[in-house]
Image: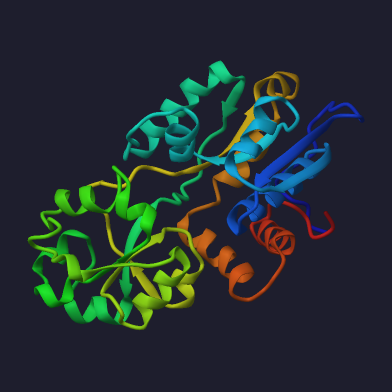
Length: 294
């Protein structure tokens, strides 16, 4: 039987254990199950504390040492936990900034995945092709009747949200984009509204499975407005000092994750109704990270 590339850590004590936590939305549940599976393959006894309601409670488990591993997003840490007002669009710079800052909190950030679950703007693929749009800059070429947007209330009011984005791209609200061209929707309703033509452009999250399910096109953020929200494994530093090999174990997982992959995995849960644990396991077997018998 084939073995996975994640091998048992040499000379790992028989009683070595870690606790994995995650937040309680689909992508976090999948990532949490990946961390559980990777840690088990490396030889750890694993306690699964995934599915914690809310970012701050999950973060508190990690900071207090009640959990050892959690996948987190660089932008979330920088803006929500560390109290900065503006994110950093450059993905490597944003990761380095949170890595440096969280050392003081007893947390060590592992290598980031390519997957970047940031805000994005999307259109129906057919409509985008018809109008010749592939980037946010291209929207400036559209007639005013096509410059219709669906956004949620939070993005509409954020200081790093909709209005500054429009301004950066020369689409100032109230002049280039009339107020009546902006619709405020619940976050989940935006995807369907774009698909059904209620608006031309909608605010989405870059790794949401509904992008693929509805064949939406994510527009290139060609002026680098949106902050980076790369996912990375974060480890309680005392645990990492005890088991330094754990970082490389989780890095093997991170190295295989990008936006397209995560969208496809999220789709299997949110649209097709599969369980996050099974989706995580199937993917890790397919990638050769763990054996089918794990």
